[in-house]
View 1 (cartoon, rainbow, N blue to C red):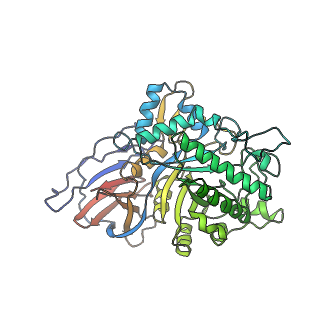
View 2: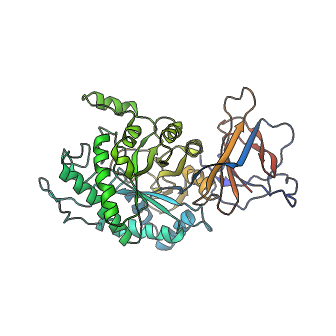
Length: 473
């Protein structure tokens, strides 16, 4: 079943009037299998009492957005390059253009191979048993063939695109097991120095290629242990702090403006990861982001990156309360839908980045890890036909109607007494003064009648079962 972004047709609300903004709406229809983006119609006005009040207060402001997007992984690039150039360009326009498409504005790029790659690789591999502390073998050739051209195209379509970069593993020769799969970073000053310089060379290479890197993490999912079939590194807090201290100084010395994000893992430690550490006598470090921001490395850390796969997004607000000068980003989420996106936004996230931008009908190609992940679009491996997935439409509900620099504003939901599945909502004020309100009805069976209130706005409308609706004025 495919969610579809479409408009809700019905009776027209009362005229806007000279001081009354016109409210428009877009809604997902989970029962429709088409794929269309239609122009909006005036808001349907419901009659009778409302179940819920959704109150928007633009005077109460929170974080500024970098935006919404996905990851242009090696796998995504591979399936996009199966398309004819003209068809690929049209799809890229639909994905990234703020005026002709859904305006994706944030990408998180793996530094080297992830689980969604056509093969394992880093940018400085040498034969087993050798090292390369001088980084003489460093090369971005792998990315120059497909990934960088696509990133340049995305940047041209949306000049305000934010790029976040994250490694799944350092080069093999820097690891305790001599492999990009599992193991730790070797605990030696020379290795920390080399790894920091490796990351700086990556940023410099991307910038030279026309793709500035705005934010950098030093390890994807650093609490992960026993990832037996794809690149990963168990990086304890102390080691991440050592890397960041060297990396921060190296970025400054190189004159780069790239900011560092810490952690890059779940809202709470997954029991599997905690047990994997305790089974071998290691501290599972359940307070990793707090501990990291309590080290000397915190002076180089602009914020904390989170994933959505375990825990509660309220963890972001708790961390923000403890470290109010540090930003929060949501950097990976697959299968979260509108509920997790709203939750992340309402808990200080400046970004919401879904996982793969594009995959094939077999949820690949991939080297390991998730076997059922979807991209924002599916590209058939035989015909190159494009299918927009539920991820695409969820992203569109946010990215099409907000712009980088938008500010989250207060949106409170006042449900009826006894409502066990109330509406969820989040709202934004764009730099041009327009407002976007996203509302989800998580109940798959019961519609909700809601009264929307804001300065100059009071409308009552119905939100269908399971629907996500974006209202703008």
